[in-house]
Amino acid sequence: MTLTFIVIGLAAGVLAGLFGIGGGILIVPALAQFAKMPFKEATGTSLGSLLLPVGLLGAITYYRSGNLDPRASLLVAVGILFGALGGAKLAELISSATLQRAFSVFLVLVAVRLWLKA
Image (cartoon, rainbow, N blue to C red):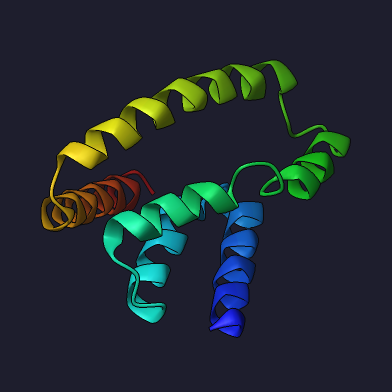
C-alpha cells in the first residue's frame, strides 16, 4: 500500500506542477479507487497531504521564471483556509454517497466547460 500512496502522490505532484491541480481531481478518486478508502477519508487524507509541502518546489520554480503572483497566491490561500474549513464542516453533514455523486457532477461540469472553451 505504501507504493500505491507514493505513486498517487507522484502523479498528483506532476499534475500540480503542470496544471495547478491534483488534490480533489486526482488524489481523492485515486485513494478511493486504489487504496479502497471511503470517500470522506480520501478527502481528509488529500487535505492532509496538501498542507505544506504540496506546491513549494513547484511554486518556487514558477516564481523564479516570473510566473507566480505572490500577492494573489496569498489571497487565494486565505480563501482556501476558510473555504476548506467550511467545506469540511459541510461534507460532514452530507452522506458519503451524496458527496461522491456531487463531486462527480462537479468534475463533469468542469470538463465540459474546459472542452467548450478550448
